Amino acid sequence: MAYRKGILLGRITRVSGFEGAVAVKLDRGFSENTEELESVFLEIEGRPVPFFIEYSEYSGGDILKLKFEGYDSPEKIGEFSGCSVFLTTKSENKTGEDELMLLKGYTVLTADNVIIGTVSELIDNPGQLLLDVEKSPGKSVLIPLHEDLIVRIDRKKNQLVMNIPEGLLEIN
Image 1 (cartoon, rainbow, N blue to C red):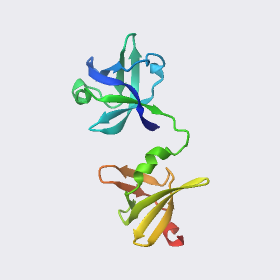
Image 2 (cartoon, rainbow, N blue to C red):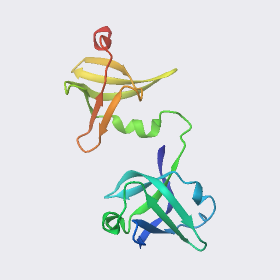
Image 3 (cartoon, rainbow, N blue to C red):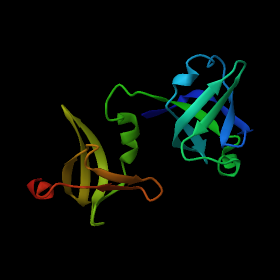
Image 4 (tube, rainbow, N blue to C red):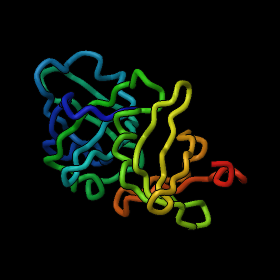
């Protein structure tokens, strides 16, 4: 799923009911196909945060009721009142390249918390995206960017934790 800030679904106006659902005031023209939504991004403190939809209910007008997975009470979901809701899009490239460009400057670590270096560039090699990771000034290593190698991305710490195959760092 990819985040596109330009596709605003609406804004959360209030908690709806007692099961932890919210009412979203829809932006113009979004009354159709809202039942097919699987996920959305909420803009929280200026950052996109993905939420998976347990169910949605549209009964006409400009209000859509959404229930997010893992939010089962009005208290838990109430903090999102006023947040903008953006649609997710299926990215034309499988890797979500727009999002991956944000990895520049991230520290790359192994799953054992060993620092490899800092991402200096994302290289679009035919058939494979590569991270150009600067280990030290003048020395860099190319690491394939594949979802199976990513353990986690910590956006707060600007860290990319990867499960790097044995011997990969030595062949560069």
